[in-house]
Length: 454
Picture: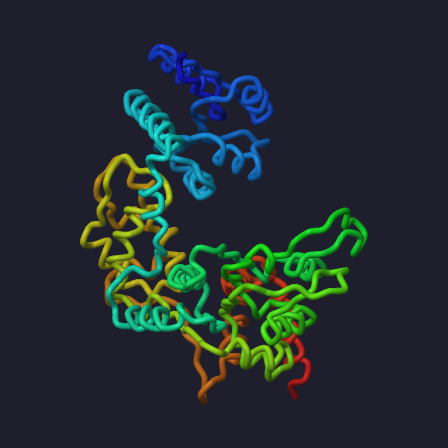
């Protein structure tokens, strides 16, 4: 039976030409203009590969794309105008991409390779390769700050100590937590990550501790919480500075007694987990202002790991670039390398978004460079001020007439961003690497200071 290709998106002419060419090559091809048509085809005849061409239909939402990339190999076709959209789908799990205009022979070769690889994966022949690629991407490099960090992780990982990971947004705090878990005696157990800034306060207790049936309206059945799901492993609380006050008190009890209680229950359960937390906030300053429990901070401070920003370990930039070229998260048909000029620009840039920003820049450069082996300066999407030469410095300069506290630096930075991005609170929160709830609090503090000024 011929392999079945489902072509979704693009314009009518493109769909017609591509599907005709695929049929000439012996494939069974179905072309549909929208997500609804694709869903009907999937229900009737599951394909061996989905060919997703940009611009894709408006009814193709994130949830649907995530389901497709989970259940089928997905090959993305995009032009330069669709690169950002293509990157998003690739991060969701799409297998590969091709930049339009696409040579028909190249498209056919990519389809054949992806389908063959999918068959190998189903037989379990990719398992060792997949495990090898799961190495934490942060822990790449040979700089002295990184080696000190690795030494600390190797020392604390075998213990049961609670670990607090500090570092700027994008440095890879979750990767450090993964490494602690990997090196610990709990490595065979689950690692459950919780983004404390994304859970609504009303649901936090239920999600973290679980609930009994009838504990509240809508609780139709018993539900295990995240602590229970992490049994025998590690619970990673990311952005713990965003934890609601009522949950802070209950988390403190878990750390002190190693026990917790489901919402609506009358009995305690053992908390058989190790807790690792992370934040880019100044918890000491928050504790002094009454925004974070001092006694919880004492418990979290059992072992503190500070992750250095990328600008303080520039010797790791080149190894990280090579790592992301090899492990970009999606397949490549060409082995890429970076030109000397482009590498100089990457090493001169201060990387305010740290490793996360670098990964995004390299992934975009891979796509922009198309069929070229070499990634050059024009493929790098760095701020203009970063481009001229290695001697150029970038970023934001804040001036004080005294040694500032972290809280003062934070407020000065926010004021500067307010001037640059007035009225765009979502963008402000993204640039600062904090949740919008925290941003509202900081804005209120600045307003209060302004109203109290003489």
